[in-house]
Image (cartoon, rainbow, N blue to C red; front, side, top):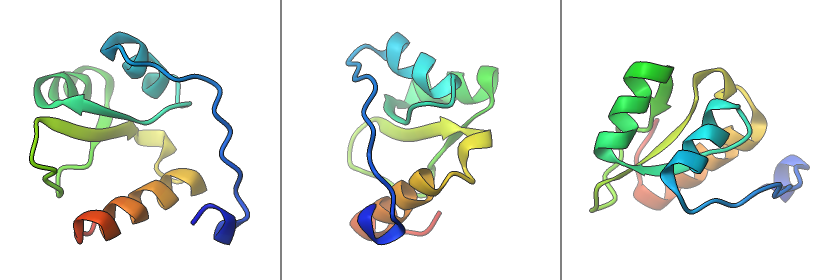
Length: 89
């Protein structure tokens, strides 16, 4: 999917702790899965966007910085989520 849009995935960091993951999202350089309560808190306090039209059968949500929604790699990620869960964002 990235190749179709002439995009290259550049992994600068990988985190497995919520604090680090949310810091990357807030900085506009990351996307993350987060527990419901964490995603809601980040949405209310930091203006992050929750992909709330999907249900993945667990308490995680896909979140990103609101200003990053126009970035082609995030558009690509949201399209992949749409196909995977057969939902639209």
